[in-house]
Image (cartoon, rainbow, N blue to C red; front, top):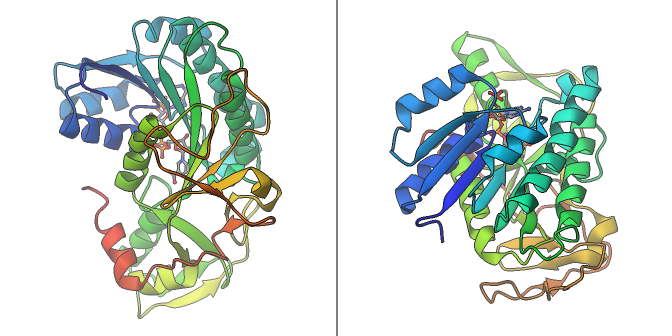
Length: 332
Ligand SMILES: NC(=O)c1ccc[n+]([C@@H]2O[C@H](COP(=O)([O-])OP(=O)(O)OC[C@H]3O[C@@H](n4cnc5c(N)ncnc54)[C@H](OP(=O)(O)O)[C@@H]3O)[C@@H](O)[C@H]2O)c1
């Protein structure tokens, strides 16, 4: 579906954007891939790696609606990946996080509708489900904007959906590069926030492929959640350094013991498919789709009342070997 298409990725120089670009170029022959982000150095460095004639690099800020409007001229598909995503930075600079993650989402939506974009996917995070920190709360607001956008299109045919997933193994600022740095520096113990803490784990490639597949599945209005394994943080530390002791440092501000992807309070809206869940919109749309069958013909069934998809109650757990295979595949 991306052959001869024009695709715009906000936050295209980030971990997700670069992997997405790599995979699109491996699988399709797009007309244009537009990378939209603020920092010229990151764009310059990305241009050294991705210099296919279809590549376009636009400097711009998602907070700037007129620039967003210009960038989306002639675009068929949009992936909105730009975000301020460090939990502590969001707590200390709340309005900056709100401007990027909420105002930015609104600008993406308005520009997509005005330019007759076909489909838009907004990236979300497990931290947006029952949020306890500002980052998660802004991503929940962004999810709500993307879902409601399907009712703002009027006579246009733009469709908006959301993809929500958990920790990307090895992404910038995450636990795997942090532990690996400590191990390299010769530390004699690894810091663990809580011995019971668990997280969902996904590789960047799996995340990108899930997003690509959902462009084919979406009616518009869904929050797509992949079924992915969990891991206890103590097991993650043991897998990386079996000989090292652990030092319990306590849960940090804005952190949960377990992450949630489908909240129990949304169970009446949640459908289970073979490899993913869909949280259906809580509002009605003018042309309401039947979300129990997606555009690929896959069928979903309602989950039990009170069902919660949570990294602590997951039935799928990573072994040390499986986790190391994921952690070692970061550059694939
Ligand atoms: N990494 C994870 O573990 C994870 C898990 C679940 C969900 N997600 C979600 O996935 C998305 C992508 O994450 P990522 O890991 O690829 O993030 P990342 O590596 O930090 O990249 C963020 C990108 O956004 C751009 N950006 C930031 N603020 C911007 C603004 N105001 N206007 C335009 N561009 C802006 C950055 O470039 P400039 O700084 O140059 O503008 C960069 O290209 C995010 O929405 C995140 O919430 C990530």
